[in-house]
Image (cartoon, rainbow, N blue to C red; front, top):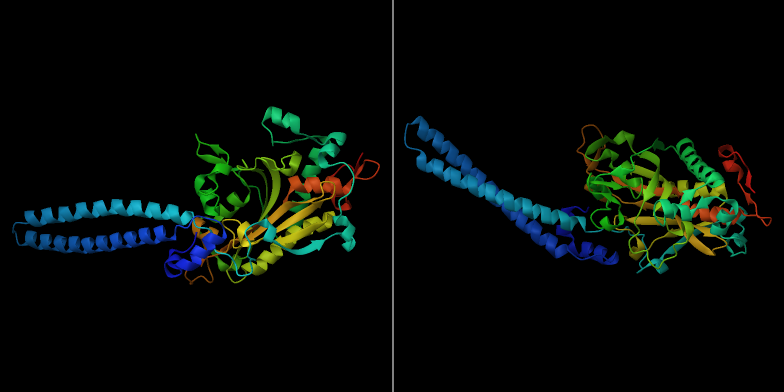
Length: 426
């Protein structure tokens, strides 16, 4: 959420940000509701002063044992008018809040201009030993054929017991998935300084509003209406909201958390896209990285967070590239986002495995997360960041295709050996 003062003082800047992210321009409506809200507040303040004056007059009349009925009636009329205006104020504030929730975050000055993903900027590529041949398309079995050959996953039975897009991991496939998760959690907690969190996989509506999924993306979230609970689309939601409505001491920042969770996404609007196997699923596993920082350090921390996610791929030996998203491809809540894309050599395409974003104070305002620079300082909104460190579904695609051998076996990198009872899949 943006500061209403920012919208009042810089409406054209906000209009430009809305246009850049292809959102609906509601600035004029916001300014009008804000004007009406402030007018009502002023009217109520005048009436309350009048009520106080009348109350004092009534007290004087009663002490003098003079008739006070007329002034009592006047005070009741003032009270009724205040109650009526309070009701109007609540309506205006609700309408204003809904409009404010629909305004996307402003973009950082370093974000490139562009309408869609074709304008994203490649920042770097990485391959083991810098071998550029790693980015070539090559012959071999794709991840579905490899899964069938080695009985790693079962998408058909997943569809039978749940629905399409809900995979079942089998045998060595399940062990490999668990190895990915444990390896990433150990790396981030032991080498990168994150504190592990295991959050609930269901949250309330306010938590989704706090991180920006609600109301804009409500149609993409699985809902349990009887309990008013929602399956999380990412661990970002519960972990960020751990500190909702709290004031953190500045000396604790930056605060770093990592969390494993299953992630659930309806993926509305995905029809017609490549949905084979793990390329697009409704449930997948992910290790999330979340940071709470001071405004002054958030962009340095953004670079570090992205490097932490990249380290996973480098240790595994998976070729990848870092992409800086343009304005038209940057998410609703983000001020700046890097995507990490892994190379799937048999598919011959780049697959997003991580998205690392700085939200500045956008989420902190929605969730009311603040900090004090020192114990006597006035609370201010902190900055939140998060990134996938990593999502396993598309990582699995690139992993299997990268490490399959000519004899049909799949080599396991040494970094995963402590987490598995085998060193190759045969």
